[in-house]
Length: 117
Length: 186
Image (cartoon, rainbow over all chains, first blue to last red; front, side, top):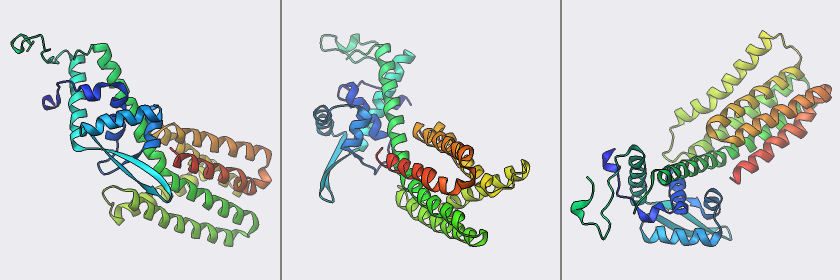
């Protein structure tokens, strides 16, 4: 379990992105989720969701596939193995905070040697 | 990046809620074809029971149940991410049907229920209870479907006991079909 702990992932930690990652990680590996269904789970607007998906895709955490279902365009999203691992690490970090065992990263103005360990 | 324990707790709660919602909606989508299929089976079967003599009606029911079991097996195999073996699929389709038949017989004998109308209603009450119990694990829509089916059947049994087959055809089968389409949209 200790392998999965931190550091915190700033890309995932934003609440909408956290929900997106959790919703996708709940599905078995090859399954994809349609944009409209993901929107209903996350409860975000189209534009907001698209922006967050773009951020996650650039980070390599999700894959977006666009195709046609009959004549209707369809966007489907799946979590990548990298994204699944990142979510697991971030969740481990959040749990460690509650357990009081989290190790904070040194901030830019805090030398690494001063970081609590 | 500093995260307070309160923020961590809220984030973990958000993860749990989104995961649960995603799993429930997936379970609804997977259940939709079965619910629609059973809606069609009920519509045909109960109409058969209303208009045909006892023996031919039973044959219609048997044919419908066999057809629905075959349909369920095909859908189950298509839906399983890591293709389930046919043996396990047969187990999953046969065990619930056999359990249902045994339960109906046990309760009917235990409470001395003899009229066919009461047995039809009992069958639906058991199915409704199964949906309601499934709701505890798979999501609230199952619970709502179970309560809806039981309530509609109780109303039919109270208001139109002599025409319960036709009532089930119009109301309960329609309830299943509508619920199936509702589940499919999840």
